Amino acid sequence: MFDRSLSRDEWQTRRAAYLARVRTWAEDRLRRTSRREKHPVYDFLFEYYSFRPAYLLRWSPGFGIRLEEATSDDLDWRQGFTPCDGGQVLPGATFPRHRIEYLRWATAYLAATAAREPAFGCFGLHEWAMVYQETNVRHGRVPLRLSRAETEAVVDSAAVKCTHFDAFRFFTAAAVPLNRIALTRATTTAHDQAGCVHVNMDLYKFAFVVAPYTSSEILADAFDLARAARELDMRASPYDLTALGFAPIRIETRDGREEYIEKQREIYQQGTPVRERVLAEYRRLASVISESKGTNGA
Image (cartoon, rainbow, N blue to C red; front, side, top):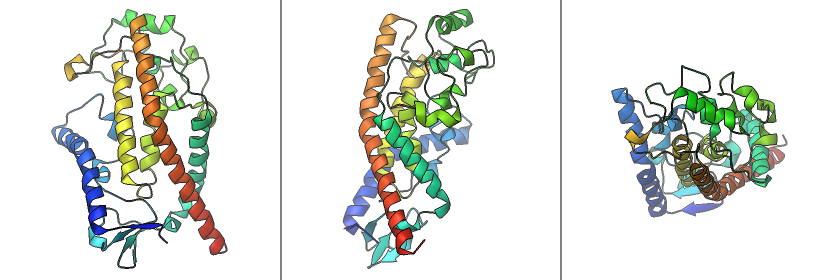
């Protein structure tokens, strides 16, 4: 039922350290929401990914870790935890059966993106393609850095080579045929690669979507990665975010394109160990579920 134990001091220390990492970001989001304030960079981490601040503030050791001297009242997550030898544990076998098919797909997807050669040099043009020949832009309260004509000229003069469907699907109708690949949801696993800023950002989704079965330490690392990736995403965008403290990466210039590639490589390097840990947890969870089904004769 459990692989190892954490003493009460150990798990309380780990929980406190985790909360110290994420509390500011969760509370900032709650404060903005209460004031009906928008943040064009950081709101994405809570709206697109729809993991509530209250959930981010819940700590879990992951599955198979017994928390010594813990009671149900000590738990931030209640789902699946059971009493065990004077403590509490989350057995992997309690993972919801209706989520197993997702787990299998996600494991294969993460393995495929990890194995594929990373590609750099898309220059974040997906954000430009989202405003191409469109007056009703997503961040209407944020000015564009260039004129409308100059912004469209950047797209027209570039090779748009987005490989991530969940960015491509927000392209304007006029920008869709400009992309080198006609992406679809069905071909996501065939095209996603670990150099993509959004693929790295999505590791946060893979970490939280099976919560509390992944450890919160992995979740915090994935959240940090997603935040860094989002900052790069918007700094390279056509929006002028200098008033919010984000210096633009001017991908319409040679120096800007070189800077983008450098930062994109940094995101890839930061994301590699996170991807490995998330994939390892998915594989371990799938293995435990498989063993459980065999034991139960399923």
